[in-house]
Amino acid sequence: MFHVILYEPEIPPNTGNIIRLCANTGATLHLVEPLGFSLQDTQLRRAGLDYRDMANVRRHADLAACLLALEGARVFPVETQGGLRHSDQRYQVGDAFLFGRETSGLPGDVLARFPADRVIRVPMVPGNRSLNLSNAAAIVLFEAWRQLGFSGGT
Image 1: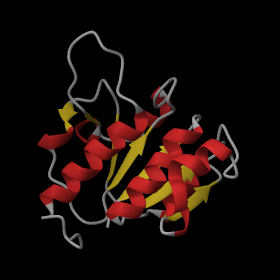
Image 2: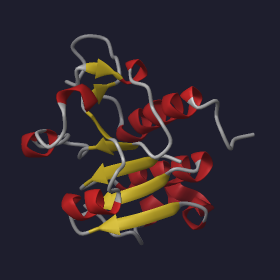
Image 3: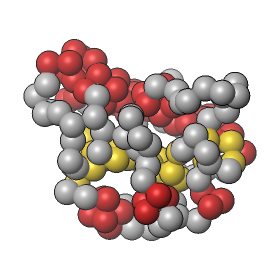
Image 4: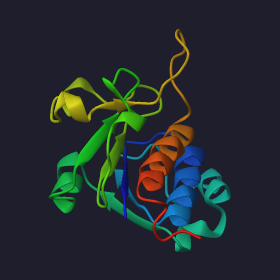
């Protein structure tokens, strides 16, 4: 239904949690290399539990390859400095949410590839840096799914 793109993720438990999130929402997870860990990492497996086999996970050599595989999808980069709140956008089946590295977010050249009105943010109190990656992914993905009436869910 939706796509979650992790751009060069660095922390295995975050990716494991997002694998579990995608398995439970029907979203496809796209991992853009290089990864900061092995997919055999113990922490990744522990966080993802047995959901890895239930999730649709795809690896891509770089962002260009990922975007080519998602041709036609609307991509929404998620950044702390995004112009629109995630809840102000209207989502549709096939939309993709692009998240950056845990330590540095999305690089400027990546953000420049997308229209400014597609860059979204999750609201936070002033002065805080950012949310945990897996928490931010869950917030955005569930809002998009909510807008579609939790189609396909129980």
